[in-house]
Image 1: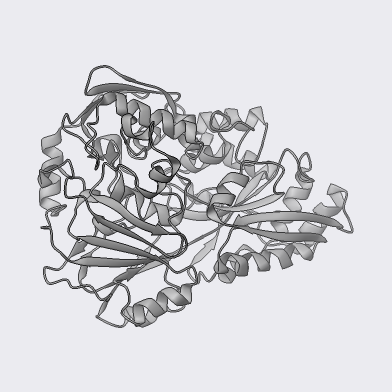
Image 2: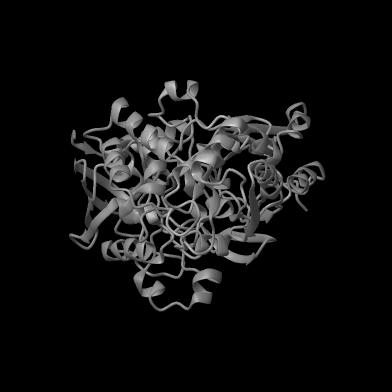
Length: 524
């Protein structure tokens, strides 16, 4: 791999031209309404949509990705001052020598190593476990990272995902301190978080990066206070906007967004953020294990577009792969093939082949609880009833879902949300790479051929249309899991938000927005 060196002056020029992080501090406030709870805001808490919109304002990583699909030399430095890529598996990093957290703890290379170790130990970052081989301090402010493989996008993901914290703080902090009063390295401090209600962040007046020209786009601190409210029902997010109770909202119902599109008081941003819903079967401890025909039957019985509409997403499409079509290596030919296209007659034929011509199966489907998800999965429940499969829906809150999804005794079918920062292989590895899981994969597969094909498709040395198609076709044949549907979401902001920016995961974070000089919050 060509040697790449991050030249910081070049990055500064880009930032200057883009006007990033140049806003002056104000005493103003901003209120944002989200569809999901932030969950656990400790450094290595479980994944959730609300957390994605929050944690990067609290924790700096080594680097930041401004938009989907950025290569290693396009990332913006945060705690890392510069880095040099020696080859596809090795990178040397120098961090700033004046980083400190919100409680005054000095950050060195050993703290970075410790943060990565804790991220793996937490069990919430399975991709890191699959990507990272070793990380070691080579000096007080330098370190070396070695990857397990040269997977496409792995180096970028390792650099821009792990929150950096102080070992001195984290190793001595109570669980309550970690979740309610964390020592953060980002521009905002957690003041308060109330489950399923709101989270309040306040500006970190002692933020370590005092030179605003050196800040990544995540790290602006324009507002004194940022409030993030939770409104799980889409109608409540719409009402909050209409009543001028919020300055912006995420995942506004596509049926209601036209009202805001036609009003100059609002700035509507449609987003294909690389996120999709997938369905997976328990392939180790369930009626679906060792019964390929049964898995195929269920997939053919599901009307994915009807399920999507049940969720309330008017814009989108049934999936044609276990990755979203915005992935940079997605093959166009997949869009024209039969990918479990709804076919009730074929589903019934496969049920007979599976040994259940009259049905008579009862299974549990687990999903992360929301009103929209329950509506959509009720459609799926009815679909499978048509072939004699009784589905018991098991909604779970975020914490329980993140715990149970790795337990093969809790569910037979799972519907989850997955995303890519660029490559289809990144989504595949996130679910099927055996190096990242203690029980085969996210759906408990134990298939050496699946793993071999995955590694060939993911490796930068063998990544090609042929290896991509080989994995795609094998997974489709085995039907361990499948893409269900992808969708377009809408952010709506008041007109005082003049520019928006997606991050490397397709989300829009408040600190990444650009505001008019006369911006005033709507929320009182």
